[in-house]
Length: 483
Image (cartoon, rainbow, N blue to C red; front, top):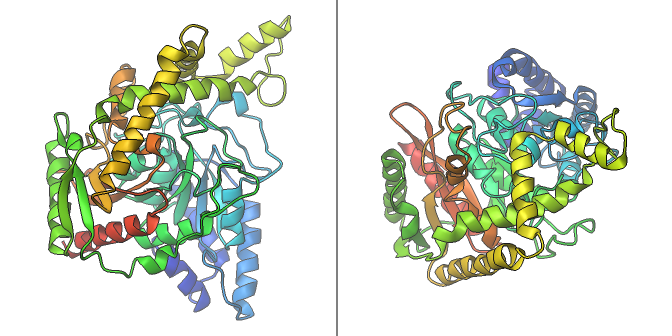
């Protein structure tokens, strides 16, 4: 098999090909590394490769196949890991200079679960610094480019994760989503990205940005692969007190159930001024297809949506201010060698180690938490967060899923919004509300613009109802294939 044919396989196809002896896990890993060497020079999706670990895992899978053993669900599947998730012995920079020399001594739970399921871990993927960004232009190690249009951003902060899947540099990847950082890059790059319910996937080993918002999820080539990945990742973890002990769904089996009779909600607040006409038309086409498949389409209201962006940026920056205080030059990471006092070391280390966007968010968050302003900003934002959550709960009393845009525009050009932070923040306008409410959501490709830029549609489900969400996503995907 050729490099291209091997790197274009899906998760299900990889496992089947290895079991049938048409390829080996070792050959598959080698072909992915060959493609990375040839293609990633222009994309910049990988920050580090874990070749020895990957080939050792591939050899184990090949030995299992040679013995005729039943292969695990991700047997031999080449996977990339976003660099905010720690991986034993590999760099964990979080896209920042302040952690450029950090090598963690343990694996994140999500990383360990993938490897236990047979995945071959190719390496660490580029991302916005500490997952702060909507374009992947905030990485200290250079921007990631969108494989579908190299003059465009891939989205952020999981831009490297989305770009690697879109460019066939990995069969699947792990990303993280705080306010849209899986769904938005998935939409910009034309791949599938899943935001699980808060607590569905362990956050242990995730370098934290905003602890009440951060979530780990997969980016894949199709919906079935996303379901396979989610079944492996989901479940209670003793190392994460916020992880849920609810039983994990049979997500792959759920895909076979029909969508006929499901009630699909269309939040009217997501279709107002500012939505690109081509994106609107593509999502209207999705709704027509779901109606033809037997779904009931119903307009619903999420009345507090207009407060989602300010609420998110108060809560997220406040939690970032607290979480990033640990990076001070004392325990790990960068330390300024010329500091003359402890306070001087703190100042110089953080000034040299953090980029402009991280500094901006730390300043905003510290202000919101400061004496005299806590009640006016952070407490008030948490109260509005409750109202946003109640909006979703009320909507899910009427419908089974919600369908909406992921982003207001297709992928924008590199450098187009870097000088206007407010415009960059508004890129998250359709994604942050689901993050604040803790519900599940995902982006599914649903067309392209006249300029051949991918368009994604957002499907959102009730808390812990990923199965229904994935069923609807599969129906959307099936309609795209027919067209």
